[in-house]
Amino acid sequence: MKFFIAGSTGATGRHVTNLLLQQGHQVVTVARNTAALNKEISLYPQLEVKVGSLLELADDELDNLISGCDGVISCLGHNLTFKGIYGAPRLLCREAVERISRSIIRTRRQHAGKRPPTMFLLMNTNGNRNRDLAEKLSAGDRLVIGIVRLLLPPHRDNELAAEFLRKDIGQNHPDIRWVVVRPDGLVNIDQVSDYQSFPSPVRGVVFNSGQVSRINVAHFITTMACDASEWQKWEGRMPVVYNAE
Ligand SMILES: NC(=O)c1ccc[n+]([C@@H]2O[C@H](COP(=O)([O-])OP(=O)(O)OC[C@H]3O[C@@H](n4cnc5c(N)ncnc54)[C@H](OP(=O)(O)O)[C@@H]3O)[C@@H](O)[C@H]2O)c1
Image (cartoon, rainbow, N blue to C red; front, side):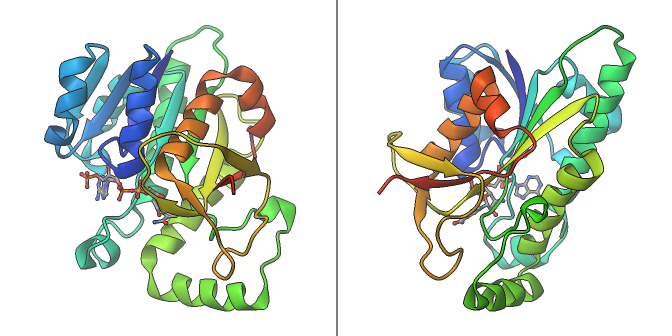
């Protein structure tokens, strides 16, 4: 299979990239700092890396990367620096999701012929609610998330990115089917371990929250992308993922 990955140089995106390459899949990506992928470039001839910044690519450059992909995976996130959090682009994830979606639609419609809709897997946050399920937060979590939304622009960006897929693309789009993955607090562990996924949070999102390793998130994402039964289980939903206790 062929996948486009946004955020392949990030802590989770690199795991996603490696897991797909190890399984023999073709991966295309765009990276501002290709040195971060030097090891993968030397090991895997089926990896194609375009130098650049996703939001600055021309439409036809993006279309060339996305054309023919079975799936698109975004692990983009704001760098945790003052500039990354408060500087431009404030809506990195939201703009990327819309640009990628429009590119999928354009490229699929240029090439007549029946292909299943392209899968779009978006890494998001468990601080975001799935409005389809009328999820409720505890009073404490609601207060903290409200403050985070006001003070930290990346949180609102994550919410808007997921809302684009949930509302604008919706459940029956002819070209795109999606899953929004909501990890709990991210930690770094080298090996895949047991983890659990649920349609909605089973713990608090701030108070009494849990953890999940980035490699487990990557494993969950790549399993859905490559295994039709796992994909069907979560398509159009916003699973929350935790390390097993
Ligand atoms: N921290 C947590 O506990 C937590 C919990 C749940 C969810 N999340 C969410 O999970 C996502 C990924 O997290 P992570 O820790 O794996 O991310 P990360 O290591 O910070 O990686 C972020 C990726 O986004 C890219 N990026 C950042 N700014 C960019 C820009 N302006 N233009 C183009 N690319 C840009 C980075 O590229 P460069 O390498 O070029 O900078 C990198 O590839 C984030 O959306 C985060 O909000 C985090």
